[in-house]
Amino acid sequence: MAKHKVHYEFPMHCLSEILYEYLATAEGLSEWFADEVTEKGDDFFFSWGGGPAEKATLIRYKPEGFVRFRWEEDEGTKNFFEMTIVIDDITEDLSLNITDFCEEGDEEENAMYWENLIENLRIKLGAA
Image (cartoon, rainbow, N blue to C red):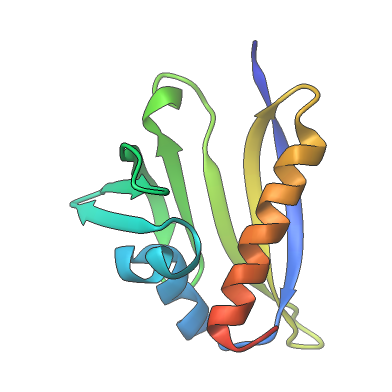
C-alpha cells in the first residue's frame, strides 16, 4: 500500500543552533528520537529497546535549517521524513515542522508518535 505525506508543526522555545544539533547528529538524536543512534557517513542506525538497528540515510540537509532522512525500507520510493526549523519573519517564533509518510488509516497513530517524540525533545532542551 502506498504511503501518503503528512505534516506537523510544533512550536519550540529554544535556539535554532541548539535544536539543529538534536536533529542532525547521532548524539543529539539518541537523546530523544531513539535509544541508540550511530552514524557512519550519511547512514544513521537507530535502535529501540535493544532491538535490531534500523537504517536511515541522510539524503538532504541545510545547516541550521533542515534534515531529510529516508528509511532503508523506503529506498526506491519518494518517501522520507524531514525535520525543518522555521523562524517566523515577524514574531521570530521558532517551530519544528515535520514531514513524514504513513499508510492510509495510520494518521492518528503517526501524529501521536511525533507528538510524543517532540515532547521528549522539548524536555531534553529544557523547553517543555
